[in-house]
Image (tube, rainbow, N blue to C red; front, side, top):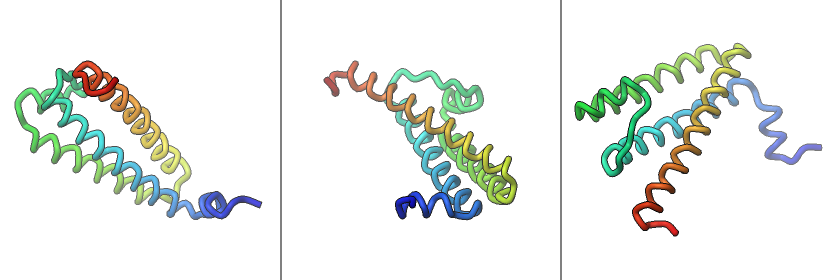
Length: 121
């Protein structure tokens, strides 16, 4: 018999899993945005996304925020509308995994910047 929390997850409907995945996607996407703005403002940061880099280089932070929120909304809407399809759910979790890996990268970057600044031993 599975523990209650695991049972809840395993026996959940696809719609609930997709809803939870979209919530995680939003959280990680907005975290990426906050870290990008922080790094651009306070560190020597090179943005690897060419479109975001162009917006940052021209001081278009508002447009960058708008673009990030709009694209996340568009992606989340597509995943929600296709929630009945296994491939769409797998794709959504792949995007979530990419954001998790990006979050780990942000953690490494932030730790390195703080250590270089003398803030972390």
